[in-house]
Image (cartoon, rainbow over all chains, first blue to last red; front, side, top):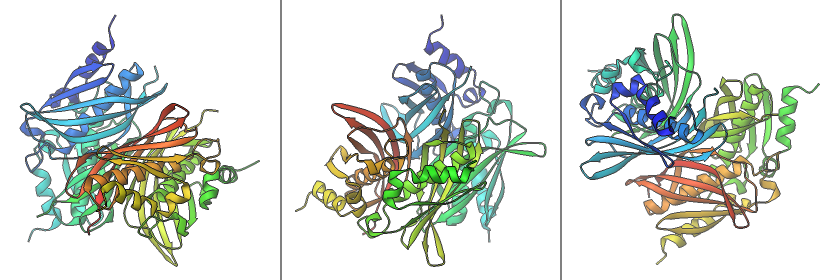
Length: 136
Length: 136
Length: 136
Length: 136
């Protein structure tokens, strides 16, 4: 029987856009999920930092998977909110998300996005959103 | 002298991530901006619809440029919120954003994202956020 | 048979907190709702402007009623986001909300909050949120 | 010399709306703030639960004071987002907020709102927002 982590990883790897960006689901457990994205030049905006849209993709997707795990099935982000704290630069981004309030059909989740350079992780964005279970 | 539209277009075209996705700034005037993105397969999620992260990129960027025009200079999105209304499919996405409240240093903007198929435009997401002028 | 406006007004007037603040539902029709609140001293914060919490109450409640009308039944706000544009002062506040995306069980609504002084209405806040139908 | 906690308490107690509702600032330290509000009947909506507007007031204000402490001065909430998790009932509400990202002029803060009944605290709402320092 496939466990939830394997199911999450399988769903994640079936997302063409995640593959196009190079993102990876590196953790999925009872505490939530972690997504990781190596930063390359085509992720950037005009000032050389990671484009906000890359960060919002990562936040949206980390929230979705944290919610899906909590709801124990396929799910979509219904809405979310994102605050940018610092310009993001480094070798990769990491988004860590967890469900904070879980109902029968929806989960409210939070996410922190870090920019990683060597051993240093800089918190660069915070997100919060609602994930809704897909009706089977 | 370069007008604001040309400046906006120049800044937009200097964004590696926007080029990577294939987005275009198609309108920038006193009423706001329009971004357009032809939908291709690598923009999709596992169910064949446009990935939420593509929509959040488009919302974030349309808000930024609507705010930058209103603030008359380079600007960044400080925060935004996005509600997904419908799964997005069609030949392209269009994000229309305008500034609703403009101060000296920041503008609060709203954005509607449509999925376009032929003559039909379906509203598929709504966003609202704060854009902050970069101090020169 | 009671029409939707009368039902909305009845539900509104059954809210002890709305009566405590002095708010009134002054419009409810196919285009949305308007709530009105005469500004009195106990609505203020330490600088003499209307407290943000009064504005957030008005936004939350206007969103709820706009969503409930669109969903044709009793409903609650699931989440919302609020941007303050200007300090609010004047003789009364007016919140105008409308549903922008309506599904079977939820409606995404937007709201503008104005401070009214004589003939002048100043836009002082913008909100956007999700309203969910109560299952009967 | 007045310490930050005393300054925060003084500002809080100078808010007519907070006194009108009966709210109290019960903690203000390096980790953030706690606001407490005894629940009385006029805080409720038509179903007997605490009105969402009371919760949004508490969230807004807790965020403001957490941000103000982090920014070391008087501050206002620029924007926030609130997710309701559960209907709130009990003897009192408690909002706990902390700054997560602090810049020179603004702080991004998070808040949890609990409904307290006896020894039990139920998480009923989550908020996130931007607090901006008032220029002196």
